[in-house]
Image (cartoon, rainbow, N blue to C red):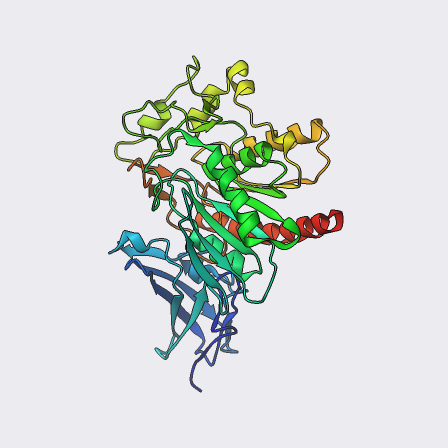
Length: 435
């Protein structure tokens, strides 16, 4: 009897879990490996060994590996456990939305072999892409199939800048018009976050409402890290234009430019301005500020775990209060997502404080905080490799330890994405009921 390696959905959206199983195996130890060549040219691999009983069957969702790159019964572990074995050839393609093909190879105890692969799509059939270069605006619109109108979500990157096309494409695959809005380190935009005016985002929101005409006028804003800080700031500054806010590992306070500012500026320089005036940030002239964790890795040449530095500035209650984002002004529901082992900054404590603040101020809309135990800073969409925990910051050029473990980060991706989709569906339904 020959080996059969079965994948229930050989081609589908990247956020769709796959069932991987095999039959006809010889009893003994079987080896399963996965490989993936990213559009940027980097190569990724994962491997695990399993004990196969006399029935000759293997189900990755229920089988515990004997050894390998993962240790729990996880249906998509061959994907999230992928490790980079050769570096990128073209970094410009690191955020590519091209389909990903995962190749699987299974060898049983008798040396019999089976191969199969499956495709993960960020852009599903019918989704269209359009670049936006109008006035100061820089971004990309992904539109779902069908006539619409569609609810709209505006996506914001963090301190690395650029255009969040991958997330936008995936939201469009889920039925949302998605505006991946760039604000620095992108075509037509400055290279650094320094002095970014909130008027730019007001212009983008006005343009999107007029040109895209979203369903029932619903516009959600979602951002990651500094983009999460920004999403909360936009919701509180433009409550009449923002229907819901999603903050992935956001901040509760306004920060300076930190590692994303112009090299000639101090790190406590102004990141955001409004009506020509700088928004007060917690670092500027704060006597408690201690940058040691920014500059000194725990071991020579080790990645930086900079979260402890963010705790130092909060020892000064006056500066913390002055830099607080006035989240109670947000005129809609809020979803907060954090990781308890965030190495970038203390997102869990930030989210706890934001929710408590909104509850204490009797915010009339739902506020949810998705805690992700053991997860780090890089929480996004599911079924992608989560082993690249220490990354070189694209602006600062230093390696930062984002925290978490591959399995915790993978579970956070899956759980958070489920909550995001449920949150948006509920927010849209409530918005439509009130309009």
